[in-house]
Length: 101
Image 1 (cartoon, rainbow, N blue to C red):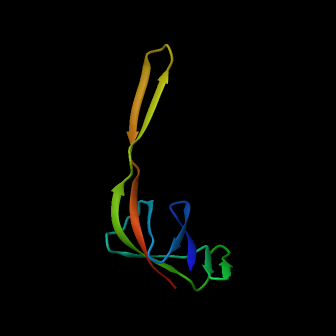
Image 2 (cartoon, helix red, strand yellow):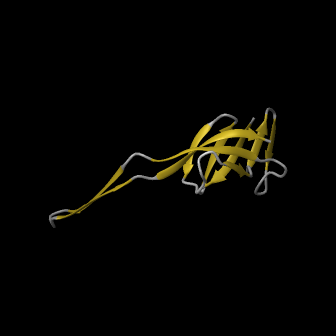
Image 3 (cartoon, rainbow, N blue to C red):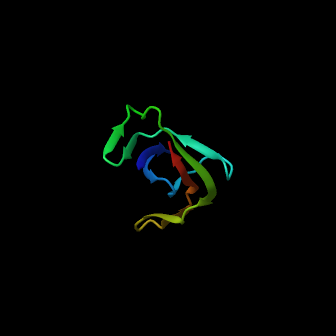
């Protein structure tokens, strides 16, 4: 059984027991979060919602917060001696899918 959930403007395919990294959520470590799935597949039967599937929810637990790898942004203008170097580390939250009910 798997489900498609949406958080942070992105969609994720999840199974029970999966650990996923999503955009940072303002929740404490150990909190439970409930998502309304967009699609649920159970063996042969696939149920798509409009926009969410009724009477089904996905429960996830917050495991940790962190920052991703550094992305270096380097801008320059040729022959003008203009250079700008920036770094960015995107914050994320790690979730463990507890159940799909």
